[in-house]
Length: 297
Image (tube, rainbow, N blue to C red; front, side, top):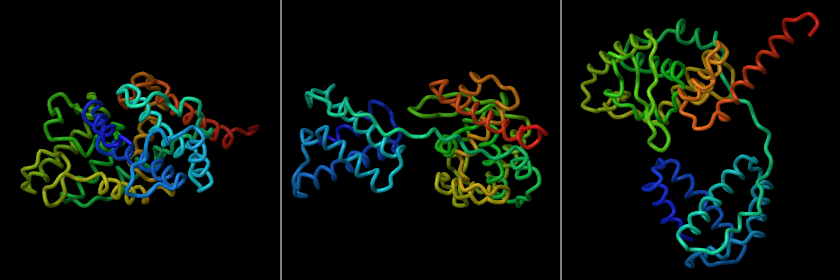
């Protein structure tokens, strides 16, 4: 299999992030391991692409479902394999695509999790954060997620010069290095100014906006951990991640009458269909309120 060549293509020609490329690589290694087992191929021998036949792919998918994998996981791996064979066809490295007639398992469309507005207001306005470098940083991160809807990968990659202090806005680099500008609320700008003062006391030479106590760029793992811990103070939801705050931002915007196209641009979605799922979330919440409050519901 031409896994390395495919991953190099994704990285250098398509500008995919390292995390995305790693995900594709794991998916292809997974199908390669399955084919190796099905055909009893020795570990020291390569798995040929011609071995990946339609019936093999169907068995591979069935084995994943039997092992308890969700339809979403199976479809993601199948999508990686489709992309791989499209690459091979373009490069003239194979003649047929065995994934063409294969449909992925159907999945129920789950609505996004989001934190309620009163819970976020309680966290940001009432929960005490220590007046330290880390305390101010963590509070700012939570508020920036909720006020901008940016992804965790976008937040940790921010540099100090991405913040336009005069224009009250931030330049965000999203998927495939696409950039967008998000306005910043006055209160959030005040939080940024306080944090930058505390940050300067850390005496870091790093360009990164968010750093740890040693002056190193904050990792997405540490941000996820912090967000989960802080959200546990105001919600009992099992999912307590930066992406939940992204969902919360979009839901709050639409609930307060924002134009869906404007929300799409702020989130950095390519397709309006991706943003429209938040309108369903808002409707579900509206139905719950109606059923709880109306005497004849």
